[in-house]
Length: 353
Image 1 (cartoon, rainbow, N blue to C red):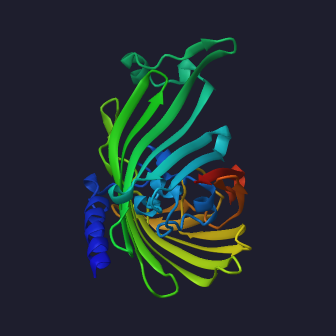
Image 2: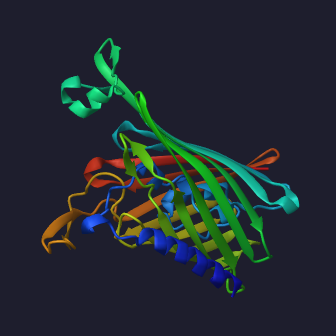
Image 3: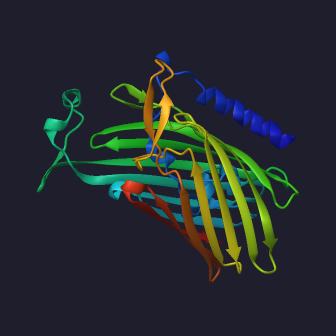
């Protein structure tokens, strides 16, 4: 009952935020800022198709459900993640968590994404931008260029509230910069996870990116607010043989898109090798199109239009756990296909000590 009250409370907050009517009935799809926050951090989470709300004891969770970062007393975890994103973009993250006993688990996480030396033609820059005097392409040997950078820095706290219930919160600052122009916003992530007695089944909920707007040229863009509920169960959990089979599922409602469903399976063998696969339903991703079209109806004038379905389909990955002296190291890899936009490869290294 305690968990249900928490989930209901999180749900009410999320629904109030995501269900706000748009002005004049205009669709809000794709109008959020800081799109890099939609990109999954950690190869394990990505290979599981983003069905990650109920994973526990994992430093990756500071970028998903902060309740899942709660770890054993005195333990520490470190995460290094690199994502070869679309169009030669590098999406990188680093995280650290440390359990402080009765005070709970504390963590620091940083996500960056950007590109330098982007060719710029001042003739193609909108006049109002040039008149503002803030966009100044750098003169290089190859001509005018500019760069952009996304950055999010978060502080996480989580705790085992009871032997079954974990709760957590992350406070973060989000910053985007394009050459001499920048904008910042502040946000929080909230989450809870409850462990039942049935086959290690876990249920949980999270809200991500609840906060202020990014503002460029007095034009505000909300952060990509997301509400998710999830469940996971261990079909097989033979600790003596080091074998485990876990099914996971998340139902997600972003502020700027339709409801999404993520499902996944993770198989662990010999307490060392992890095989993962996920599937994303009704997912429109962050960028690009695979060429498939869905028919939608405009809520204002009733006309139909085509919406590209992107990244809808399988994800896959593998993890390898290794002992390194006093450290437990796990190397993870994830593969995602973006169709005509090519494939994305993500790598992570996680240390526990």
